[in-house]
Each structure stands twice: as C-alpha cells, then as structure tokens.
Length: 81
Image (cartoon, rainbow, N blue to C red; front, side, top):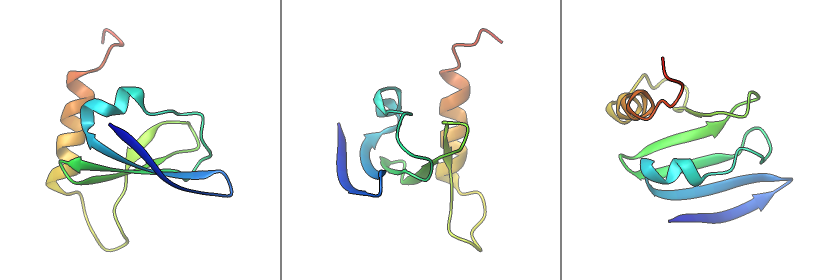
C-alpha cells in the first residue's frame, strides 16, 4: 500500500509498507519528494535523475536498511546485466 501523506509545492511524501511497493511508486513527482518504507525502515528521496535513492540525515552513515534497499535493487534488476 502507498499512502500520499502530504503535498507542498509539488513535492510529495509517501509511506510504503515494504520495498515491494516501490515498483508502484511514481517517478513523475518533483525532485525532493520522499518516501518512508516501513519495512525495513528506510527513507528514500526522488533524485534529479527521477530515481528513488536512500538518504539519511546529515551525520548518519549507511544503515542496515539502506543495505537491504541495495540488495532489493540488485535482486529486482530487470536490466539483464
């Protein structure tokens, strides 16, 4: 399930149940839109390249959740690499 919880100046904030919901998350929103994924507890931001990428507050490093996100992307890579 994806919930749009706020919209200011075209920037959206979403809450997703799991990383599996990512395939249904739009990339047509404005750069800087954010998504919080409950399981595994990761925050994503829509980059200028229209890709959802993990982000953490300043001073925080790569977390276990971000590593899970990278694993998810590798497992679901449809590029045939």
